[in-house]
Length: 450
Image 1 (cartoon, rainbow, N blue to C red):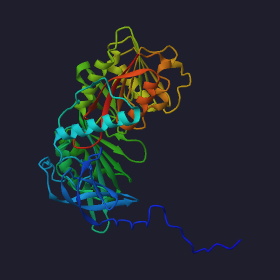
Image 2 (spheres, rainbow, N blue to C red; image 1 turned 180 degrees about the horizontal axis):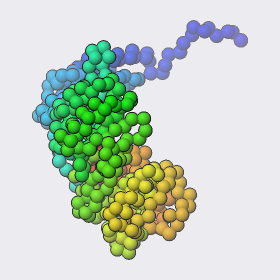
Image 3 (spheres, rainbow, N blue to C red; image 1 turned 135 degrees about the vertical axis):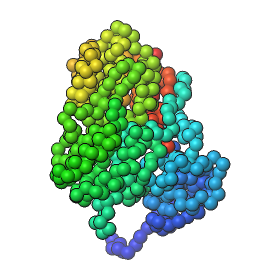
């Protein structure tokens, strides 16, 4: 057999491979439609371009952020021809800050985009549409965010402390004095932070800052070296001036500067107060969270004598209101610390008909003792990965009604297909506008057996 030449190369079936589009390249594009994440889509030289900040019908000059194979990711540098739909972003930092990506799109159009995204996922993955579409659940378009993480970095070369939010598509920090989506009580704290932090004795030892608002404002400071007494005095005076709690996060877990302090938020319709600690999951939109709980209970229609299951219960956001209506609530969460926190919240609110358990809900229930008696109804609010292993066993639990709260339409659609295969019917679905000015889609779905 003749020896093959080591230099022989075969032509790919698609013809010559195109040269990769370099990062940073500027390109004029005409946008044809919107992707589900709100980016404009253009087509050029056999490639699909996904362009942040662009709208259908517009001609833009875009800068390449990333390119692979036939897909190019870019952001709008200049709008050469705008459409009437475009609005002037309310925030001066739109386009540079990475927090809000849809401010150029009117709010009603943002809602329509999210509704289309949910409908497309359900149809494409599960092959179903709900019997009824619920109206979008909305709250304030701005001043809704009750929690924010502020980036902090010491610039060694310029000996300057950078304070702000992460930039779009980079690790740069954008200095921001006013954030339109942040709740009003946190605005003065945000504005005064750079001067406070820059005046500390070791600004290079600062990590990040988190702001919270609920029953009271709070400031958490992450630090990588012990704080001097003078710095603590400054921090305490700052928080006293802004009527905020001070929390410090050094080598261990975050701790309140005053041991008797606690973070919390209220669910007014049920006269409930839930306490939490930094790091716990809490919905950032207080108004929509309360409306979401109200809608979930309305759809689930819990009855007085029923036993109800709350999966991924967290702090008890759904479980505690449920317990005021039904005979018994079994609430299950994957993180033991959250189980303890939820149990404490039930006790503090004088609710004795809740039973909390820890379980890995990414795995089959495998005959869990708490599931043995079955349930009339189930409510679940899983993370982005969804709840596939759990929903595979829902029918075995005997539940005839199920409300699924989702932060990812793709995994909701996947789990919907499984539930439909078990005989459940998708009766109702709708979006929850938990994050206005972003393309993030939250949704709620009601399933009934038969």
